[in-house]
Each structure stands twice: as structure tokens, then as C-alpha cells.
Image 1 (tube, rainbow, N blue to C red):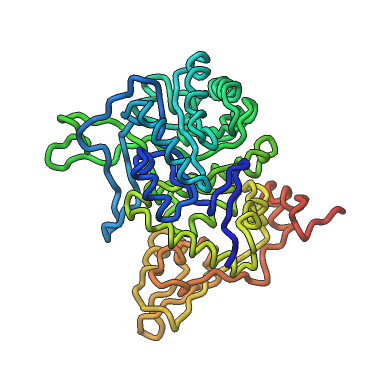
Image 2 (cartoon, helix red, strand yellow):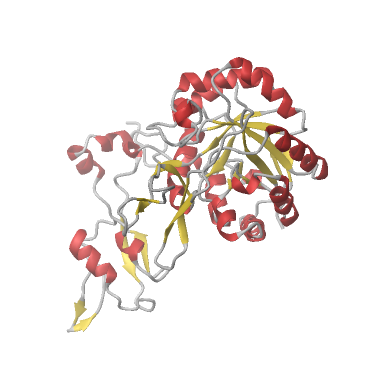
Length: 433
């Protein structure tokens, strides 16, 4: 099978799956169990100054469920570690000594004071850790204290704190970015300018999950009051992938190694992150929902996928999909696909017809010769992919390219954006004349 051994910033681990900084990495007991199960590394739950902060004793977590009550989104209001710093340091030293082949990274969150960074980072590094991850992403609790996303939303602060960390540390420094920004590139560029060795993303998204339908207060609450928290899990993966890809494909930031975070639940999710530019992935929510043994499915699935692609290592997969990510204006407007329904697989549920009839282009029949029958009307189909998205049967509806598209000259006459594609270097039909 393919070799899953990973090297990130010179930090070696037996596979590219690390546990993210979160409750699963709060203490040696948890991390030992994770390493025994086969995880490649762990980012220790975020350390701060002594004395430690105090977490709430009421509900810290809440979930968004599918109709089958599967957790697809997760919210937390837990803060950084609430254990004494020395206890954490002693346990980190012990874990690294017992597991020298696993990656152990310390997540840190400190005030915007250079002296504080200079004091604590050497103390933490002395435990033998492989690197630091600067938590500039946490959107709740700590941000109100001028840390976490309060730093991550201001590029100048990111650069400043990164410079402090690089001056105080001799091991690699990873900057963890917040998604609570309109554009991920300025924070990433600031991390690079500050000397960061890599970035990790995304941290959690600001969120309130719902209300309590009996009391009409937000849910959950602590003694009747609640607060916004950090949203994570499967539901955030598309947001994370977009931000990872933006960093990977942009000239100013493409040289930054990336640790991908956000909704990694099975091996396919890992493939998504790796192909779009991440060099490894971090997992939290899936471990909290299913336990540490999911690492078996993650490693087995990724190995089999690489074998199927005739790739011998994870490195060969990293960034493979990045060249396919472009701006809208460079899409080929002369390329045409239409939906096709496989009648042998169709269960006659009618969902494709209903959504196309009600909300799209009225391009799917309902009856034929007086009988229920669903077929695509090519003349009306615009290839929007809505029917494929809602069909409950895998591969029953597929998109297929048709030979004749819109005449490029006609499209360019009515849409100036099409001219960008005609002359774009990626266009195989480019006409230099």
C-alpha cells in the first residue's frame, strides 16, 4: 500500500492525520490513547498564561443534526486550557518522550505583549515539542480579551505576534488563521511576512446554533444566558477548502505550507484538503463524535485511494487540484453539459422534476404516454446540476458534455467576459490571431 509517512516543516509523523488543538488533546491521557490508536500527531490544547482561565461548568457544546440525527455541525464555547501551565508542560514532556515518532505541536495564545511571548515560548519549547501553532482564530471568549480572532482579524497584529514568536522559538511556527474575515489572503500574507513557517486553517466560525423552543432563549445557556461560539464539523468543510485553495493558488502566499482543518470526517475529506494544497490535515469534531478509532478508516481509505491513483506517497497528491481552481471570468463559457437520467436506476420519485419545475428551468418531463416518466428536455436544460444534487440515487443523473455549444463569436458579442476566456492561457482553443 502507499506510504502515508508525512513530513511537515521537517516534523515527521507516520501519517498526515493530526488531532487539532481542542478537548481531545487537553491532557496526556487523551493524547496517549490517540497515539495508541494510530494518530500521526497532535496539537496540544491551547496554552495560555498562568493563572489559567476558568471555563463554564454548564453546556459547552451543541450540535446540528441531519434528519437521521447524524452530527453534521458542532458548536463550542469552551476556552483554552483551564489546567495549570506546569501540569500541561510536564505531560507534554512525558508524551513526547514516550512517542518520539509522533508529531507534538503546542498551540499557544498570549496577549499582544512581546515580553510575554519571550517569557513563555522558551519555557514551552523546553518540553521537546516539535513546533508551535499560534492560535489567532478562536472566535469566542478569548477574542473578547484581545486574543484569538481579535488578533487574526488584523493582519498587522498577526505579523507582529508572529515576529515575536519567531524571535523566541527555535522550532517551526505555524499560524492558525480565523475564517471570520472577508478575505483570507491578507491574514495569510501577514503570517508569511512575519516569518511564519506555515499556516493552518480554518479555526471555528462565529455562530449561534438555535433557540430553546420552550423558553425562547438561545440554546445552550448557562444559568439562562448564552453566547456565540465556534462552529465546526462537516458543514464547514466547503468554507475551509475555499480558503485553503485561495492561499495555495495565490502567488503571494502559495509558498506557505498548509495544515488543513475543517470538517475532516472520512478519507475523502482528507483527499479534498490535500489535493487543494494542504500538506497534512487536522481533525477534531469527527474524533469527538466517533472516537479515536476512526483513524483506521482514515488511513486505510487514503492508502487505498493513493494506490488506485498509482501514487506512492501523500506528497504526490498535495496540490494536484490547485491548477483547476480559477476565477469565474476565466471559465469556458463555450463548454456545454446537459443532465442525463439513467432510466434503469431511476426510482420514479420525481424530486428532479419538482425542483426543476418549481425553481429552475422546467427541463424535466413528468409523464410520457400517460405514465410517470422523468426525462431531460435538452432544449430547456442549462446544465445547472440541481437535479444531480437532489437525486437520492447515486449516479442516476449525470452531467454529460454535448458536442455543439454556443458559437464563441455569438457569446463574445453578448458577453464581454467571454473574451477573457478566449485569450486566457488555459484555453486549449485559444486563438492568438
